[in-house]
Image 1 (cartoon, rainbow, N blue to C red):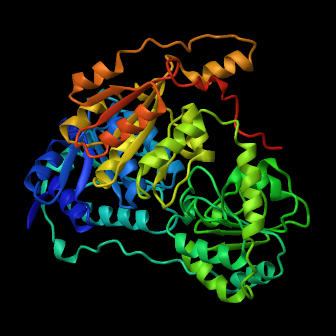
Image 2 (image 1 turned 135 degrees about the vertical axis):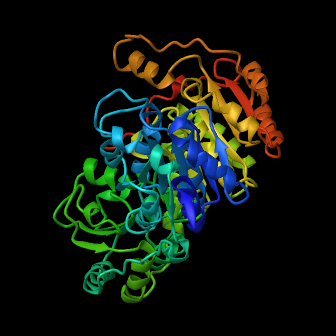
Image 3 (image 1 turned 90 degrees about the horizontal axis):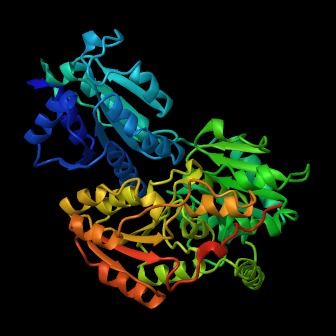
Length: 538
């Protein structure tokens, strides 16, 4: 049948199981949105107030659900506005499809100042994705889209980019969708010889330690099985929380491993770089390192592994388990003592710990917390308990200030029946405050817990304590956040103690509209300025 390029894009998305995209219309994407209107019963559009919002929401949608998050933006400044979200998706190994418009084919590369023209947009996009391509005709669209989804679902998950020009979106061509090849997931089997070598090392280990990150997100059951078999503690940090439930006696945050590092004889890395320990704690010739990662290039980022296993995390663990000898006897008492010692070391993280425990008490096991570059957010990486995978979302090494609220909106869209809390500071929240309008319009009932100290608090803390009180450019003039929420049509409340904060969260959980809960730091709650640093790692 004859289809426009825009219709071909939308039909390809539907073929791949996509039923929702985040985006903003604009002249280069007119014929894409015409097609989205034509197929509005099969695919929904959540339109945002800024391109960065579309990117972050697509990211949050993927992080919370594992499903592909799709964002669509206009070219040039629109694409660049979304690029911080795309970079964060890259850093978090997220399945995000960046679907970008483009100026007409005949005008590209000419530098004639066509609306939204930038030099070599596809080259820029290719630096922030694992794969990027351009459809040069409507007939090419299905093949390009199929390739994009194959890239998303195979190998290391990272964002991909597809660029379709406005003239291609508009043009009609004969396209046969009966032969459309939906992306196939091709499981990467681990090398048998490497499995056997790793098993022999693990079998003789006296003090193995396991480290997990986002690459083990789909291997929660298998991680628990090997940890219990070996009675080895499992350490996770920003992107690995919840892979092994924080309730489990073997589950700890990565900084806790420092106390055991000197006596460890085997490190088992599952979907992780083990960045902090391997780069900061030192190694010796007796330490053996086993790296399990789907990305062959990820094994030796810090040291050369003793054995590298390239393959799916779950399948690799399944292959190892029968070969690593009998199950070890329980270390319940030893782990309880280790936990007691760790809790004592982190007891100084107040009031952050009490705030986070209060939040945890209000959330069900599958409730989602989205952290932010704020002092409570930093502490959450250490002392917040996550019980299931994909319930603690963190910006990872990218450290993207302002990502949290917008990402939380995408998480809530993905999990509408689950409470989602966005931790926010007053500085970072204002990066995306306009998306309150999006949340109200689309009834995205996220809860914003806004800690307001009228400053960029982390930078101010460093200026005062590290740089001899050279305070500059960190004081902030803020609106009345409660009135601001009401002006957008959202719920807003200000609390001054833990009890009221907990009640406000409970009240907000069933709401279809967003709720902003402002916590004035200087009024009622102890000052977070007492939070000097994370536990020292030597």
